[in-house]
Image 1 (cartoon, rainbow, N blue to C red):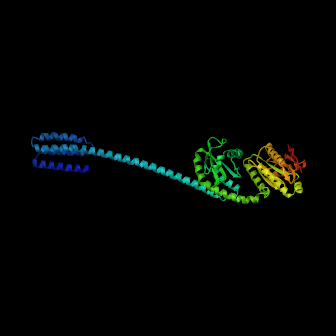
Image 2: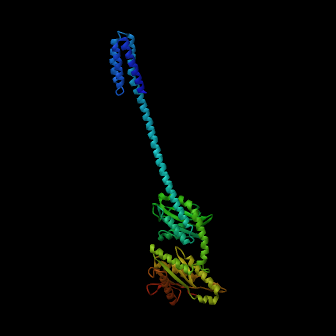
Image 3: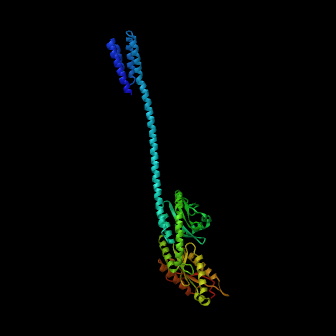
Amino acid sequence: MVNSINAALIVINVALASYLVMKLDFPVIAYVYFIILLGLYFARWVKEIILICAAISIFYIFKFMAHNEISALLTGTLVALAAIVPYYFSIKTSRGKKAFLQRNSDLKNKQTETMLMHTQITGDKKKRESEYDRIMQFYISVREFSKNVSKEDAVSAIRKVFSNKVGITSVNIFHREHAKWMCLYCEPPFLERQWLEYIDSNRELINITKTEEIEKPQFCPKNEAAVFLPIRVQSENLGCIVLTCEKEYVERYVLEGRIFSPQISLSMKRMKMMGEVSDRARNDGLTGLYKRCHFIERLQNEIEREKRYPKGFFIMMLDIDWFKKVNDKFGHLTGDRVLVSVAKILSDSSKFGTFAGRYGGEEFIIFVPVSKEKEALAVAKEINKSVAAKKYKNGEEIFRITVSIGISCFPKNGITADELINAADKALYKAKESGRNKVIVYNGTEPQLSEYTTEMTSTL
């Protein structure tokens, strides 16, 4: 637009100059117009030039005014208007430039906001995709877990699901049966007793129905937190999983636990029902203890576990003294009652990982996860004392029984199930040979008599 106005002014000035020169014969006035045109031309770069040209033009106009006042007045008016034009358009251009820069700045700010928003959306998208992938992997793991049919396989699957997840420091799995907590898996194993004491002492844990953070045990490091995953179906409490993790991951595993603990609970319920059927196959029908083959299988698993977390354990072989006399004198039904009673005593002593089995006839075998001989002797003494104190009634006659116990140690007396059972059996034979109602610890090639023998003897 500025170029168009300049062109129009030039045309007008040229026309007026030509008119004055040709008709009026006043070349001074024509000269003034050419000066103004020259000023307008160079004012495109330096607007102050128009002022210089206007001053020169006015000087000549005053000289010409004496000849023709009207032409001089008209020319002066045009000179004044011409002098204003560059400044007018300079101001207008400056304002336009300022408005343009402002719009440009606003656009840049909007572009920056858009880029930041895009970056944020992209980051959120990647985060959501990462969370989706993590949940999908967790879902796949839990789905695979549901394919397990045995409690041992389920425990192994749960451990694998959680142990490999970032931030988790330990996985602890507990089973609840007959109003008692039992530890199925613990990390590390030597904290098993402390974990059980913690679970037993916090009675409010039984009432927790969804995954939540709980007060961590005192034996856990200060920078860790505890997450409680209940395993329950409706009102039935099947057990729980307690995770210890870094504090920054608590919210994450509470959320994941609430999503998947119901599926774990249903799978555990199904396994419990199948386990009840399986127990009938692996447990002795009379005493409820493990059958011989399943006890040996469990023992082999414990041996494999010892290779990863060496601590040591003891095997006890137990035999009822003079049991044949019980059957001969009181009958097999009374003999069965004696077997059931002894099995119950062994079950009641099954604490902190202990388990027992019926080895055959009146013989029992016990796994005791302690590392010191005096601890194993304490368990054996308690069993021996409890059996000897039990009274049995057959008609009007009351009698008591005693047991002999042989003990072997892993890995001192053997590193396989056969070696350990054979050593415990030799110690048991020594106990019966030396008078019965004794506890014998196998030591090397020659079983040695322990310091313990019950004062109560069989009344048969």
